[in-house]
Each structure stands twice: as C-alpha cells, then as structure tokens.
Image (cartoon, rainbow, N blue to C red; front, side, top):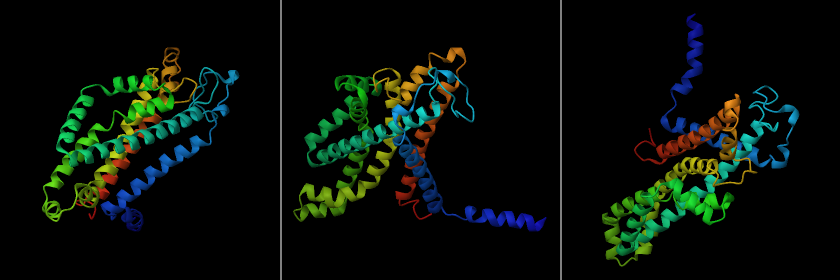
Length: 287
C-alpha cells in the first residue's frame, strides 16, 4: 500500500514542483494551441459545406451530430466551429487596430501637452457613450458586415489601453534618465522610441490580448441584435439570434452549445492574457 502511494506521488510530484513560470508557460501554450486549432479548423470549413438536410431537422445532440441539428438539418457543431473562427478573426483584427490607435494617441499626447489634454477629453467622451450603441452606429455607417463590425469594435475599445499608456508614460517622463536625456538635447521622439516604448511594451502586449474577449463579445452582441454580420454567415451572434425562435419548442441545444463555446473562447483569451501578464511582470516572472 505504501509502495502504491509512493508511485502516485512520484507521478504528480513534477507537476507539484513546477514553479510559476513553468505552469504559466504550460497554460499559455495549451490556451494558444486550442485557439489556433479552432481558427485553423474553421478555415477548412467551407460555408457551402454546411448543407441543409430536411430529413435531419431539429435532432438533439448525438454521436452523429455532437451539437444536434437546426431547423434546416444543418450540423450545429460545424456551424459553431465556423462561427467561432469568424469571431476570433474579427476580434483579432479589432484588438490590433484598437491597440495601434491607443499607442498613437498615448505617444502623441506625450509629445505635446495641448494634444494630451485633447486626448484625455476624447477618452472621456468615448467612455461616456455605451460601447454597443457606438459600435452599431459605426457599423451601420460603414455598411455593416465583417468590415463594419471590425471597425466599430476597433474604434470603441482603445480607450482603456490609452488611459493606461498615458499614465505609464507620464510616470516615465518624470524619471531621472528621461530628464538626463532631455539635458543632453535628445528629442521627444528619440526619448519615446529609446526610453518609453521598451518600458510600456508589456502593457501594450497584455492590453491587446485583453481587448480580445471584449471585442468578441461585442461583435456577437451586435450581430445578435441584427446590426453586425450578414444573416447568411455562420457567426455565433447569428446562430444565437436564430435559435431564440426555437427555444420555446424545446430545441435547447441550438443556443446552449454555441453560447458555451463562445464563453469558453472568451475565457481562454482572458486566461492567456492574465498568464502572459504574469510572465512579463518583473515581480512574479522569476517565482
């Protein structure tokens, strides 16, 4: 009996003895693998392959159809995978564009005090209007579709990262090495490139990743309300919106599995962002 317990403890001891860095790397690796697998799988699924089969309408989950089928006999597992891939792609594009906007505004504000005041006012203005309303207005103004939604999300999610970067840059500008560079006649652009950017790169990376879940949820919300992607596209928002008509008839799987899949993807991005933050944080990176 003692030998068996010793064998079990020897199996789990490597996991127990892992430091924070190793556990964090494993978590990031697993999370990224799942997300990349979802995107790559969705790219190989052609929308034309999600065919209708009226002989298999409204079938509950089974081994043949893991997520069941919808009112047109389409396989919900295939539709959900395709929708998740589309949501991740839109979220990636929107978060990267948002970060670029935030970086430009934060660094421009550090060069000129009047511009900094204007940027602070602009941030407050955008934060005073609900994100969903702004996304809908921008999406409609740009013609809707994937481009309209991506731009709508990108142009409304830069505010939080801009605030963080502005605060960090102001603190860095008060440091001795920046003042020393100013005495040596270095330009503000040189200081921003050589001193400020290397110190805020962590916030930029983590901020970009943490924008992902917000971007994906808002894309799905706007599409659910009918102001986002086309109803012909297998987006999660479209799937959830269509499923509302059939929940009263007992077809619970039409909303449950796509909703859970979207929630898991959002949580995976959040986990990846938090763990990358741990890796890049000097206070916890060496634990």
